[in-house]
Image (cartoon, rainbow, N blue to C red):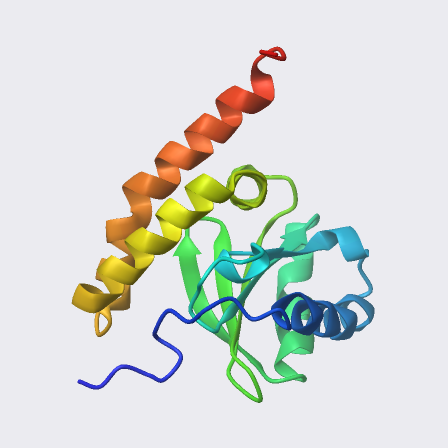
Length: 175
């Protein structure tokens, strides 16, 4: 099976943050939510980090009763509901004109917190971000045609970074 053209690691594109802002600019007024409820996550949100050319975003849902309405609204701008990725988090994808993965989850819930911890730690620690990129490039050689295996192979690294970020956030200043 041939891998989709977007399922490869490419060098960081400085346009990614702007593309995120444009897409958030469509989503926020459409759903009638605050800007803080849509975050850019994943490797495309980390400066200088190579990534798959797919922008990952997180939509924080405050009221679970809004999910159905959000899904219908997002459908009107090209998103399709892909199911639950982890318990309590829905995957919504837009493939045209650019690939966006939107993770709809509880605002400030565990999924939300962990993804922001990971992103912010990689932004602050270029050495860790580089190790992550090196790992992703090695794994892509083996798992380019098997996205679930690729994601599973990254899991231990991601979990260790999230744990380190939690410890750093809760520890008193060590300087």
